[in-house]
Length: 274
Length: 247
Image (cartoon, rainbow over all chains, first blue to last red; front, side, top):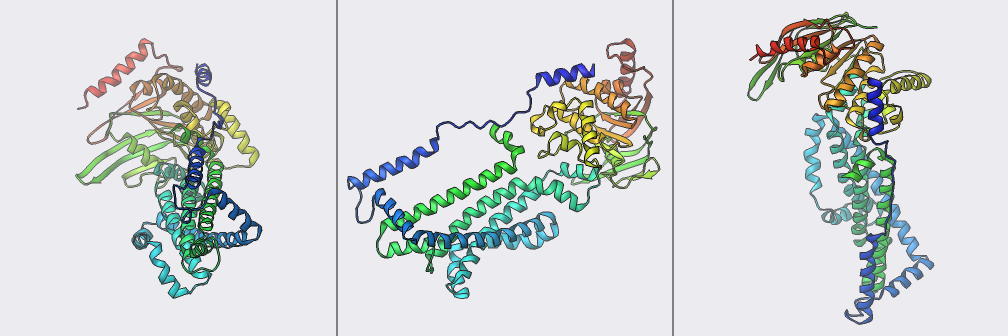
């Protein structure tokens, strides 16, 4: 009886679904392309002041020539270096402190209020202070980026740990898991969606902090390049720099999403159904 | 190996904002080694509380709980627990979930997992994740996980409460079968009297407010039990009569 019923159960319920990634027409590109066309038309028919605007063709040319003469690769390299260094420092600190306050109520009560207070400080407001303290070199920029990253990662880590189902922790208790084994086998995998979300948001905010740092008192980097464009009223350079910022930001975001999909494969079906 | 369970004068009080609630008052009963006992009662009778005390998940009780010779003061791998929700880890496959508490070499792990997957009719779903399973399949995987380390006692907290009637009947038969094969002591908490009569050698009837043991009844019917027989109906009616006294 049990065998028959179970066989029936298996027969009538769907087999484990494999991921099917159907990709239709990429409609996400429609809006950017429309903006580009509109921009081109606006410039060509002089709906805008041509001195304060340049054509898309001109911007592409600027991108091309500055890539060939090495200006853009140099600035981009400097920017990406700062960005990743600042992000790495901020993310490591955020993960560590988030884990501490997430796991211990004592440290939560001790440290979380301070972190929440500092979190509300606008990073723009820190720039003058950091310049006074750390000068105009790399240090204030990296610290600013790390500072901005820290809070995003910290909050996600903290919430990731706090939102772990207590019922799953009870399963760990039933098998007499040590604290370390509980962390490794239940807490970390359970918090992983939040951790990756924190990394993605952290990279984004670090990118913003990078632009702020480079627009104020830098002598290299894409932000600095943009600044020179403003000074010489080279609108094409300003727009080219903006495009670089947008493209790099988007590419990195896509890479992290790809990583998320790999690591959180078990969640994939749920997300698609929601 | 199976082990006895002794519950002796166990009381548990929950302190809340609206004063204390006596969840359990002086509960006393035992489960013999290798026996299948069902704990039935209305909601609030403390049947889940007593199970959590036996599991070692709740230690704020007075009185004594023994599993074999050991006085319970913390969870132990001697006991396998199946909860009302399957509580499978969502990031592990069915196979990995089943082996969650199993310690052994890679070969032993493979063998044990294959054995339980077959026993529970989950072979086709070994590599699936919990969200891909139906409720019945997930609960079968949870039972397999509890059995994997060959526990001395199997504790089940309304394991089929969330399943539909057809799946429940099928699961009850499957449970009795795996219990027999594993030669373990089983204690099943349920609010379903028919479930208790189908599965148990003995039924402990509990009453609410305060939670206490009201009556213990031996179920002498032979296995496999026929839910449609007159004898079955008779036993069920006599147990139901116990509840009509409860107010």
